[in-house]
Image (tube, rainbow, N blue to C red; front, side, top):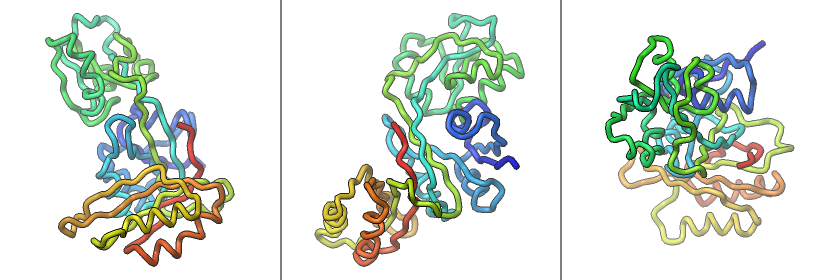
Length: 274
């Protein structure tokens, strides 16, 4: 029985590419315009799990998605890193000189700013994701409009690559997470965890948390503060940590709970290759 996988964007988007490259070549997708709907589908058991972008090596963390993890009580069970490539695509009979507008996700357009400075006559139009404009160009045979898409999407919709890899930086990678409702039961391969907690406004509060990690030789790979929606000037902290043994991670949990508020393990999983 196929598992239903929730993603943001349509077939051919970066989320689709993650599923195809890392999970299954023939997925049964539930496609959503926004991340909130993606998370809701997992929480309501409409999807078996979801794939969601959480941070980019250039643009940084996607803060609303951290809030969604908490709001829908979801758990991280895997992570994937994907190099981001943007290809300029259009109908087969088009050249770049024919193009007057380019549609794509805001982030994709921003990541190709230097390229489009060479073409001041091209209007940049924000869309819900990278693949949807390409799908519409192909289905409606829209001339003079191009899209920015990942590798493989042009072939998916029968479009032509006008210019490959037009992004400003080649060292552009996005981290995606697999979200489910339950923690992984098998921790034998887990060497990374994501945790969340809050702290009182007291001198040394965060230092005490970091000291526990140091004492147990647990490496913190990320720390992110996110404002709490129902409290002024209070924050939740999200940490990613890596460890050599799961027992070492388990050994810090009681200490963490004793010096933090609303502590939660957001997931334990195997660290992915970057």
